[in-house]
Length: 98
Image (tube, rainbow, N blue to C red; front, side, top):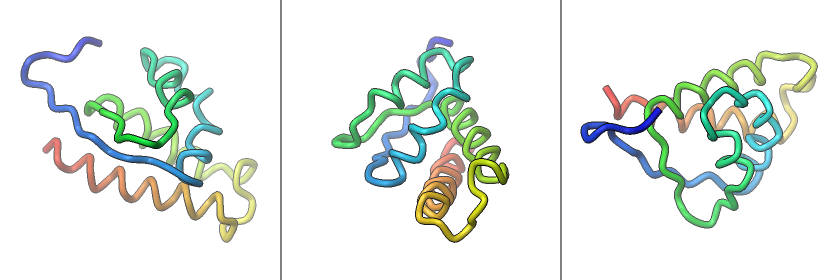
């Protein structure tokens, strides 16, 4: 999907354990028109620009991963907490599109 002139791109910085946990799940983004590659190659040094459809994909993938007991059997693990924190931040940012 190509962005139109009225599409808004939000800049968000993802780094540290949030980024490494997100990158573990990029294989679930294979139908997202290159978002999987962008996330896999993202280093977390600068903010990454995301459109509303990117947020849609990220939120679905993260929510699915957080609810999967095979991925995170221990809800107190640091990886689970980092991904949950990212999920909450992305939901707040996503509301800016409304």
